[in-house]
Image 1 (tube, rainbow, N blue to C red):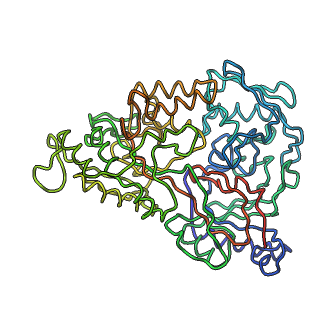
Image 2 (cartoon, rainbow, N blue to C red):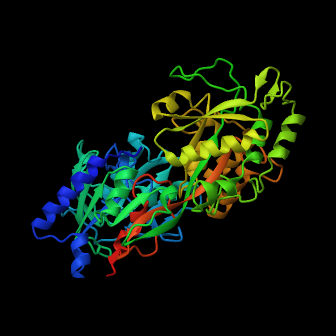
Image 3 (tube, one colour):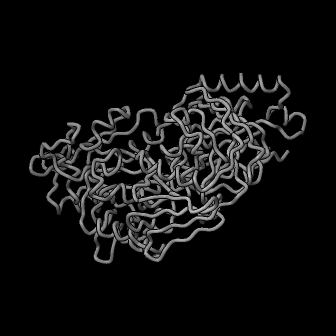
Length: 537
């Protein structure tokens, strides 16, 4: 899922807002002027889903599905709590999950939500093989109207995250047009979606939980410039902007800073170029980044603290691995201090020397030089790429940053390093990025990394029947007691750089409560607690 943007969305949102006000509604701006609670909220926080809003195809896996309810949810501390589920349990063998449902949840078309809908949702998601991974599900059945039983083909510790992220769809109304006209039991009801421009939703007054304070929300799909312009004009109550702009002052607005597990890192192709091709005919391998000593040296040469201060304007933290600030993170597995001189010495010992004195080391006729791809329209990744290139130059490594299209990245990500962004509330992402069985699968394990010991830890984590054992194995996959792992001190298959703090320009009158620690920025993770938002002026 990629973000679609355009200033045209801002214009459309303003037109819709003006029309609503003319019909008796009250805009956020008018609420400020009169001191009354506004009934409409306008947001420019990106997050348009090109595929639409069908959870069985992946909608809602990053943050709240908004229109739909989930069986479970995570609170502000990422603890799992009930939503549609009033109780849930797992059998001792980890194969059977039983969920009891509340009886006061209704879809926006008036039909009651039952166990049949839950069973249908999980079965459909498994059959469709969408971006929501339900591959471990053997069957889901409604035991009675309020009880659903799901049987897995093998124990899967991460299945709880499917209960957290998969929005429940109505069996009776889940047709071909559902993604563009979703029906759900969440706090808001879908009204209108103008692709590339805006999405309009209205409060679901029959929602079983706490009702949102706002009757209508308009999501404007503006780019960074358009969102900032809208904020300066007072036309939106919130604008999601990168931390590179977080030093900007806008009258009447404050910065809301939210901790996240959203990270940025360099994925290395870890196999040499042997002429091998993917099933789609794309080349695989890079003779430079396939060398583990070079990958370790890159990790050692990078000053991550400097990246946070200079590129993120201080809104973030140095990254150790792909899951920092989660219970399954191994915070001892990273590089603590930058040492470009030490990185150069590591390379010298490994046979990488600068014989021609041009500043770039060579070994066996191969120069320590490689491209680093990043999306051309991403200013933050551009800044990181350029800064990293400067840092590793001191160690005799040449990185050539290239801003390219996603289509170009798709073609070259098995041969060239890529500056990717990940970060999830679900450790399954770690499995996808590093397990050898996922090599070359979409964006998962694009560098064809393979280590049997790491695979063993990842498999054990997935098969664990209790969270503590699973987390122990997740941490061991990063770096175990024997020194095996995928992180910087071992295989260094990535160079993780920074963890972001998400930054939002927010109207000083909008109280957003206690935001949840956010995942990678697709969708609208800031809206996970939107039922807590209120006008404070």
